[in-house]
Image (cartoon, rainbow, N blue to C red; front, side):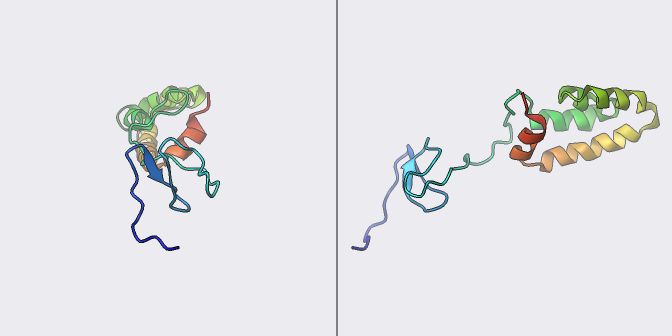
Length: 118
């Protein structure tokens, strides 16, 4: 039997990312194909499990990267001290600017994996 009318999903439903079946919006695994569902669209204000924000880290790196504030924020105290010791050379400023860009283009999963550990 073929489907003449496409299935309509309700507000509390979504399509499986793998097989296209309509499933509950809160489902983590599709009951039909068994594939784990990824979260919806990435939220630019997403926060890692330990409470660190990728946007906040990028802003610290951009504006205060020369003093290593982003390193202290992310729990990398040793690197933060090194940035402070060499801030007079302006090298940490350049590195901080580059790291700000890297934070902004880094995926949320990569950020959480690298800096989100509790």
